[in-house]
Image (tube, rainbow, N blue to C red; front, side):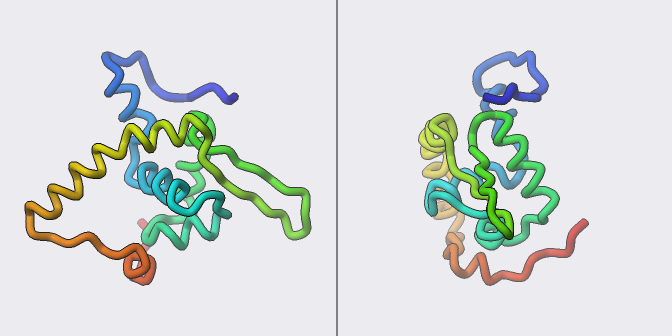
Length: 129
């Protein structure tokens, strides 16, 4: 297991938890891996419209260091790399589920709609900054 490179010390458990899922994409990466299981990098990127290659790589490295995802490299030509949730990552997804329900309720309360995952994948990606 890799040692986390997070900031700490923490003032409470929520502080530590938010540190691990900080960043726009980490929760969505967790969701994508939960929904679809093992994914290759390109599959993750297609499933997360708007994420840049650089940011996805950075988040996956941090999540691997935090023992949320496991990266498996296969000695093939061309090389194949797959990402999957660890037990710790699945436990975090379980902990985030009530937050997702809260967010869905907020969307409903505001009269907005959830975007279908297939529709989101077809949305144009914003220009990289």
